[in-house]
Image (cartoon, rainbow, N blue to C red; front, side, top):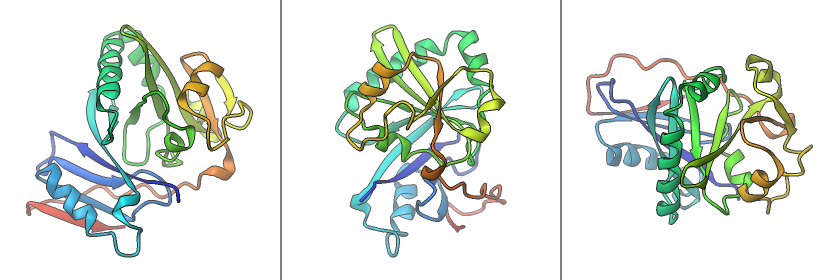
Length: 223
């Protein structure tokens, strides 16, 4: 069974800092806010009934990188690889020309553009499962200590919203095999390219309503 990707976004300008949501279009149909990451995880765990076991989830955190970019790191056993890739990513984002290019990418349904911190061996299917079918999902990986590779995964009907060159779809690039990995993706395509989602692989969902006034220490919102 495909993993369900659950995201905890740290929004420091909100009364309740942590925002929990499901990334993929078939994800858990709730939206939570809480003071702490642990509270947000508990609220998301309360949705297990009818939405699969928590053991099927992959949990991630997102932190603001400025200019609408959100760095997404998975909770898994590859912490060192992802930490290294994050350092290389943040160094690369010191280049204002790169930030200007990424600013043209369409936002996801929650807002902003997530940047998935990749590690060797991550499958393309695992990465694609984090796309919400709405905007862009940047995939980034460290090639060396100071060299970042990245591509942006977007629905075909939104590719015209940016001037980045299109490499083709995942099918065109022969990256739809369940065993295909990020390493294969990097070998097939140069950095700084758009890759198109195949129409059959995503079903856009409505953008959530903006949260209303918050007066409690945690909140669960069914969508």
